[in-house]
Length: 210
Image 1 (tube, one colour):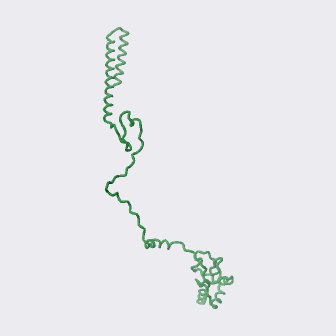
Image 2 (cartoon, rainbow, N blue to C red):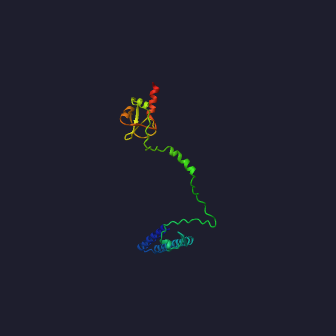
Image 3 (cartoon, one colour):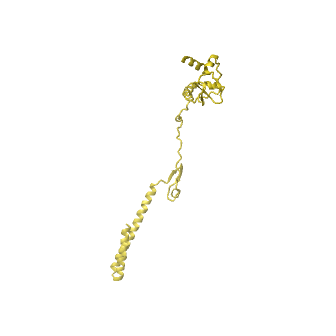
C-alpha cells in the first residue's frame, strides 16, 4: 500500500511541475486528483490498522494470573510494563478427606540372630588378634633334656621373650621370629614353651629316627 501511495505522490508532483512549466491546467488538475487518491489510500490504511488493533485487544484477556496473583493485562496496564520471571510455586496437591499416599515404610531393625549371622563371616575374615599373654614353661623330663641339649634342630625365638617354640606354635602368630638351634637356645637361657612343647616333640622325633 505504501508503495502505491508513494508512486501516486511522485506522479502528482511530476504533473504539477509539468503544469507549472507548460501552463497547461489539465496537468494541474490531474496532479490534484492523484494527491487526493493518495491521501484517501493513507486514510483507508490507517483505519484498517486501527480496526485490527481493536480486534486484537478484544481477543486478549484483560486479567491474567501470574504466580497466583491477578494482574491487569489491558493496554498500558502493569502487564505491558513489567516482566514476570518468577515461576509459579508448586502447590502440594490437596487430597481432601483421603489419606495421602503411604510413604516408604521404615526399615525395621533386624533381630539379634540375623545380625549375628551377618557378622560371622566378617569375624572369620578379620585379622587375627595377637596373643599378648606369655605362655608357660614346658616341664621337661630329665631324659628329654639330655637329648634336646645335643640337638641342632632349629626352633623359633622372639626378641625379648623367654620361650623357644616349634615353627608351628600357635602363639607365634604374626610375630617376627628368629630361627636358632635348640641346643643354642638352651645355652642362651631360653626355656621351652608349654603350648607347643618343643622339648618333648623333638626328643620323641630323635628317638623315633634311631
